[in-house]
Image (cartoon, rainbow, N blue to C red; front, side):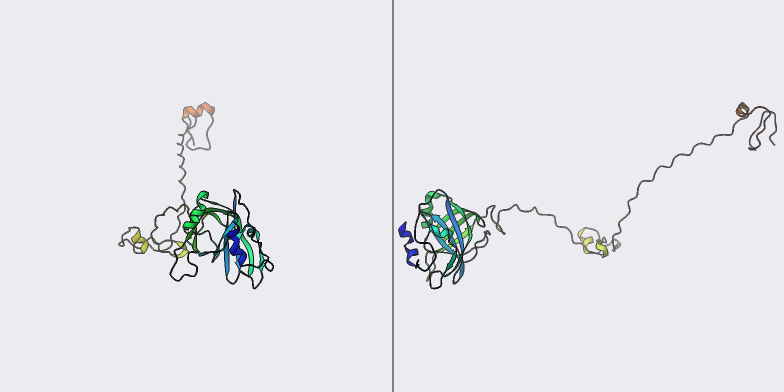
Length: 271
């Protein structure tokens, strides 16, 4: 493992730089990762994955995202010591990577197959899961095929975000909305009313023949009419009392002076 940090040690003067020394450690069951924002000559983000006591490192050209549709270029750089995962500070001018380093994200990571990480890195296809503050879910590192006259042949990688539940953006896995039936075009009139004639776009779209008389204009809402209450039936008028009924109430000899229709007592004249 000490040989893995030879390139890191050769590029730095630890008497002048505050960066940690080239020391390794034995990795445990839980592997850590860190993304450091490095404002050097050109701003970039360093992705570092703990493996076999060191941090496997890639310099990502732009801020890593959770959108599977957006791709970044990651250049493989030398392995860094494990203690570099907590480093934040300023590398002085004249030193390798001079500029400000700050921790952008950190957490734990797990390869899809821990038994084949070395083979996957050699083959240029590593799939893993990140559990950080910003970067979460499944990811993959794919080595790009070298191009003629390439500056870093075999060191250019493509970090990809899997389209899982943690993804955001257009390529994220999410339930698709159900398609809605397209509504026919409508001609608008004053007050937001819809034209109901047969000569406009709405009339043709609804199948109404254009020969119908035009009824353009605002649609006036009709008042709701309550059903009329039933008219109670008139009571049948009672017939005037007969002479027999009258004499049963009025003593004989009395005359009804108020009603000219009163027949009076039998044998009497109602004047």
